[in-house]
Length: 94
Image (cartoon, rainbow, N blue to C red; front, side, top):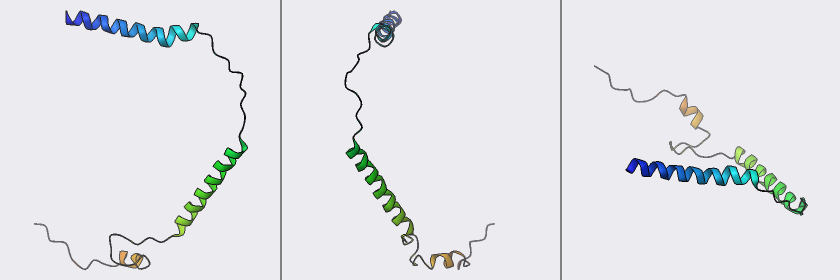
């Protein structure tokens, strides 16, 4: 009995979805708006200015030096310590 009820429910829901997204779309006349597209120069200029400001901040951040959070050495000497040999030796495996 439950299977029959679920089957009927799925048929009703499927029919509703078909009616809403297929049948009505094919038979409904499209609404034509009389308002034409207008390009807003002020908004466009604001968008361009914001993009240029972001690009400038991005370029400034590229040249900025950040300290290494994993070592206590400054950034300039981090390259020289990376090539040095480790002071402790790993434990021997049996």
